[in-house]
Length: 130
Image 1: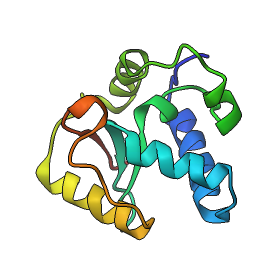
Image 2: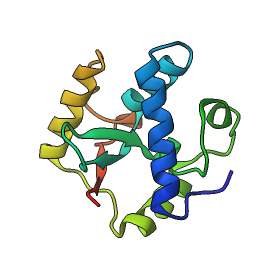
Image 3: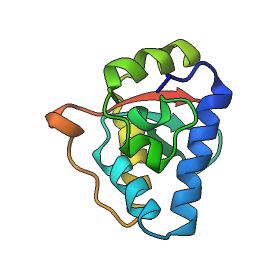
Image 4: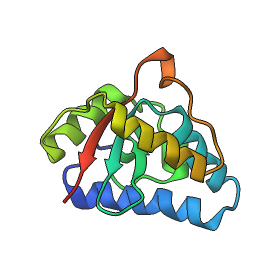
C-alpha cells in the first residue's frame, strides 16, 4: 500500500475509523478499538472537542479500510510516520497533557489505555489543528 501524501488522505482514513466507531458493529468496531488501544504514535485530532486519536499505522496508508489494513503484511510505522510528519510539518512527540486526553478518549470508548504504547514505548503525538 502507498503512504498518505496529503491531509485529505489522512482525513479519509480518520472518517473511516470514525465510521467503524459510530456504527458499533463487529468486526469493524472491535478492529477500530483495537487499533486505538494498541497504538504508539497517534494523530491527535484537535480540530474539535473532545480530541480524538488515530494510530499512525492505520492513518498513514492511502485509502485504508479494515480489510486493506488486515491484508497489508508490510504495514510499518517506520514507513507511515515519516509520511505523516511530512504532511503535518512535525514529528510525533511525547506530551503528558495530550496523553491525558488520549486516556480520556479511551474511556469514552469503554477501554482503559495501557501505560505505554506497543513494545513498552511511550506514546507520541502529532497535533492536527488545521
